[in-house]
Amino acid sequence: MTRPTCEDTFLIRKRDLKNNFFSAVFSGYSGADRCRPGHFVHVQIPSTDVYFRRPMSIAAVSAGRGEVEVLFKVVGRGTRLLAGLHRNDRVNLLGPLGVPFSLPKKNETAVMVAGGVGFPPLLFLAAHMIEKGHDPKRIAFFYGGKSSEALIERNRIKKLGVGFYPVTEDGSMGEKGLVTGPLERFLKGGRSPRPRLYGVGPEGMLRAVDAVGLKLGVPGQISLEAPMPCGIGVCLGCVVPLTQGGHARVCREGPVFEIGEVRL
Image (cartoon, rainbow, N blue to C red; front, side, top):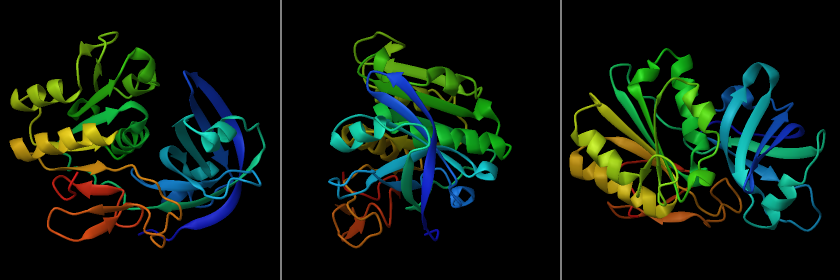
């Protein structure tokens, strides 16, 4: 695990992405150069009566400028307060935390599967891979949600030059249905030489991605979401069972796990 940094930063940019989705960029963070795709930061909400920090997946970093971007959806009081912050507001970050993704080899095809607001780590992963010389044409990005309104930052994904496959349950964008349907057909069709799966999203989707990987013998990793009161493995509030027995802490041994490693 990378040694974390705990320090105050400043909100320098906030974007309203509509439908309760927001982007926030924090500057002045000396840990930015150690952030890797799959890491998360623990955000302290600047309020006197919000006790626990909020875990936020990292969507992008600018190491030279000490900037970290998080994308989130307002789902409760903490994220609502975060969405209400203004430029130059002070926010304390603890991180980078957790275990990041393992990068695929250059001759492997990265098949990414994102569900809803779970896509930021995969956006970071795709951009990081391309920066490291990975061919964007060997990245397939499946993005699923209930409707087109749930698929945010689509143009940002497309600009990377990756194969983009939107899937919505109501058919308002891309193929209609669940994202794992076209994913399985894609893998069976042989369109992805030496595929390696990466999944981030709600538990039901991850369970299905995990099952597809095991069924087809495709290796890969999934990133779990869980309540993380402490973020450093002390409180045991994010424990999950392992298929081989025992348990793991999502914040410490995860959030990234191998396909088939966790009992979902």
